[in-house]
Length: 115
Ligand SMILES: [Cu+2]
Image (cartoon, rainbow, N blue to C red; front, side, top):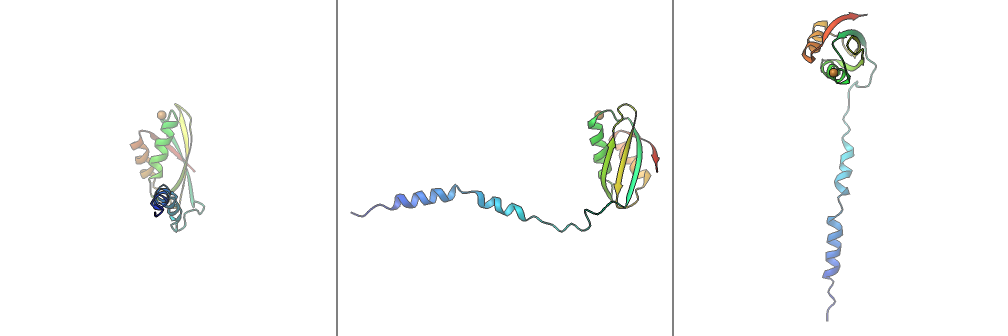
């Protein structure tokens, strides 16, 4: 004559296991102290690059140049089939040879630097 409250238990367990938002909450605390990350770039260089023809070229160049040490941002003004302008902001002065090599690896040619 006892009431089966096992059904009640099952219901509670079920509701508990379907709640997955607990794991989502821990996602927020990945705050790493970035040292001087957002400071204004100390150096801005402009380069002229030959051989870029489309936005894919732009992203290749951007990727290669961004990989150089000290580079904070890369902006490309695409001139398809002609000479494109590339602006690089960096925390340290860039070695032109390193830039030339990076562009070469991406498949493009450093036409000249402008200052
Ligand atoms: Cu392209």
